[in-house]
Image (cartoon, rainbow, N blue to C red; front, side, top):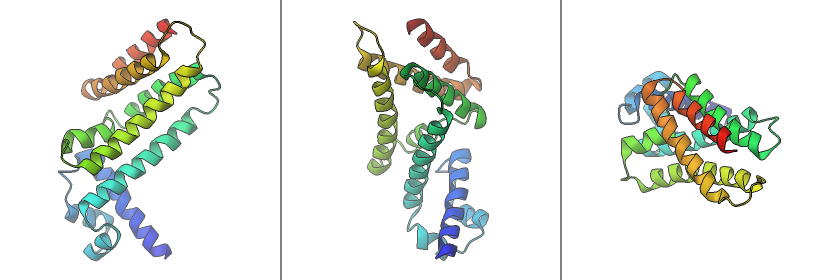
Length: 185
């Protein structure tokens, strides 16, 4: 049983690297098999199709994103600190990945809207981040401001700035969002 888990993880790790670096459509099953150093039967025992492997990849990305954010935001005690850590985390993600961008945005851009299951996974991941921001904004002590609207717009700004940092290969757009938010809050 331990061997199966090890092989599955190896397949998923190779696919994760390839899907993120070169794209889902540019990654072939034969390349995954070769780089994972497995037999074709091993791949299909764990993932009946390339689409199933993509689902596992996105689920892994989801789990790792929130675990990494939780670790990154340790010590942030106030909602304001957590909001700024969210932006700082996105900045760090861009830097660590050499500005490769958000894996979820990349998949949707590559596949479009044709795959409903994939689209729903990506949408759920983004909604989870947006709801997290809304919960922190709701806790802020500000009157006369629509906190949900503010959280939703910050989320959109961060998403757009992430795309911009991917294109420009620097964090200036995300830093600008942080500067704007500092003046607002």
